[in-house]
Length: 180
Image 1: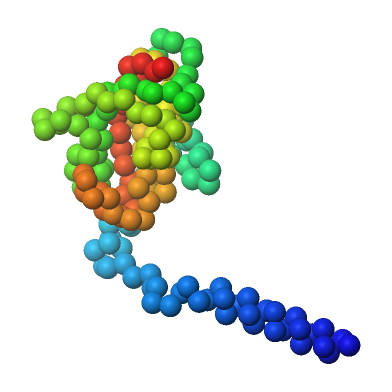
Image 2 (image 1 turned 90 degrees about the horizontal axis):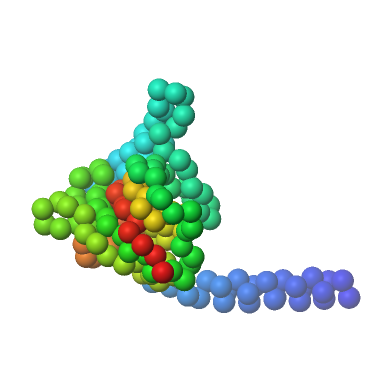
């Protein structure tokens, strides 16, 4: 009886194992090119460098906001005059400028390098996690700088327009105009 039970368990495990592997056929994850590896390393180094900056008073320059298992950096450049903060259902009107800090390429802004005004829907699946989480803690009138790691940005895939390479750290300067 015991050997029959062991044989049955073995058969079930084999079937489960084979079914689990059946969708792997033809799917391989491409290795990163040397240029991509360099880009990833530069972005990670930039983030770690900013994370470690200490002001004269011994305080870290950037505050850290933990979102799920990742951390973004931000600092308040101007304090907002309103105590309330938006909710996940809010539409937040902002003025923002965004760059890829490693290459200095602008990803958000006008052709002259100035911030643009836009309204962000905080519960939109199109809004990157880092911006959504950060804006949930901001006040009207507040101006801040955010450094968002790729895990809370566009991830490990390239983004087509504006072109954002895989694993890119993002940097934004944002002024919260209003929310409703």
